[in-house]
Amino acid sequence: MSITFLIPVYNESETVRRAIQEAVNINISSKEIIIIDNGSNDGTKNIIKEFRNYKNVKIILKNKNLGFGNSIREGFVNSSKKFIYLQFGDLEYDINSCFKMLKLIERKNLDAVFGSRLKNVNSKFKLYKVLIKKPTYLATVVCTFLINFFYKKSFTDIIGAKLYRKDTINKVIPLISGPGFDFEFVSRICKKKLAVDEIFVNYKPRENFHQKKIKFYHMFNALYAIFKVRLFYN
Image 1 (tube, rainbow, N blue to C red):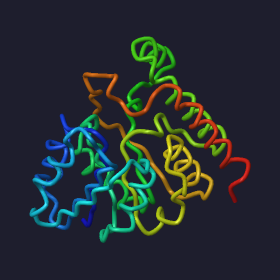
Image 2 (cartoon, helix red, strand yellow; image 1 turned 45 degrees about the horizontal axis):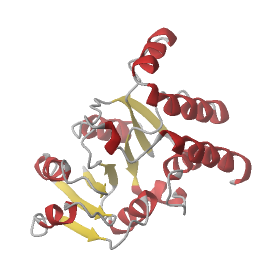
Image 3 (tube, helix red, strand yellow; image 1 turned 90 degrees about the horizontal axis):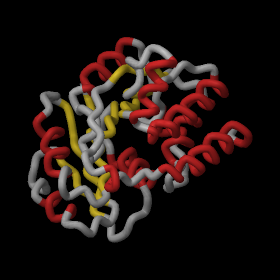
Image 4 (cartoon, one colour; image 1 turned 60 degrees about the horizontal axis):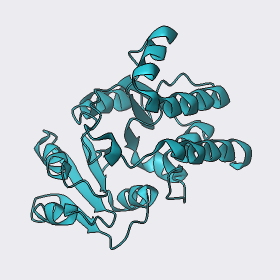
C-alpha cells in the first residue's frame, strides 16, 4: 500500500497534535504525511513544527487562510503516493477506517471511497430520528439527495471521510477554495463517472460545536456548487 495522509489544518490547537500522531503511528509501510496549515493563529503552527524532523513528514505553513480547497490541491501536488487519505485535524473521523477503504479501493479498482456517517441508518424513520437529534445533518442529507438524483447514485453521506486514487482524481479537482469546494469536487467526480463506493466509518463529533469551520449557512454555497457543475461542467 502506498498512501499519503493529507492533514489540512486551520486553528485546531486542541486536537492537531493527536491527529498528526495518529497518522505517524498507523502501521503502513509506504506512507507519507503532508500537513498544510492555512494561516492558523491559535498556536497550531507551533504544534505542527514539533513534527518537522519526523521521517516522511512534509509541513507547509501558509501566512493566511487560502481556503480548504487550496490545501487539497497543494496536497495533491506534493503527494508522491498512489492514494491520498484525508485526515481531518479535528479528529471527528476514525483514521483506522483507512484500512477498510484501501482494501475496497484496490479490490474494486475504484477512483475514490467515501466514508459515510449515515450508512448504517437503514430506514427513513431512523434518519428522521438522526435529524431530530442532530439537525446539522440536514445539509448533508439535502446535498447527498441531489447528488444521488442528478447522477443516479445511492450515497448516504457525501461529505464524510475520503480516500482518493491520486492519478485519476487529480484531473477533476476544482479551482475554487471556499465553502463549496467539497461539493463541487464530489459533483465533478460523479459527472465524470469515476468509480466510487461508500463504506460506514466511525464518527465522533467534536464536543464544542461552535468550533466547527463549516456553518449551516454554507449549505447555500454547497447547493450553488452542485447546480453549477450539473448545469455547466462538461
